[in-house]
Image (spheres, rainbow, N blue to C red):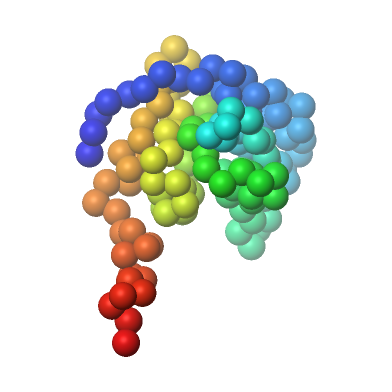
Length: 140
């Protein structure tokens, strides 16, 4: 696990905060996420809360990015409604983000203590989904 923090993409944080402020209304949408694509575009999304386990904003942003033709994400941040600020990803999101984008940076922290850390720092000693797949050369 590394402890190196990277530059915080303030434009990305502002984009997520703006979506949280303007689009998160009521109990169904309470968290917004913004992700920076490798080509510089910003993709935003909100969670879809449901008592059966609707997707977090980070999961929705992965789908939105794919729908927009974005293959690689560099950085992601989630922001809560009602001025709750930056929220760290839940355990499920950490695993999925690591599997999809192992080099992803995640903005975490509060107030003036925001920092960007590698997704692998948020899930040390993790299971790697791709490890269970056989290499084509090893299959019989």
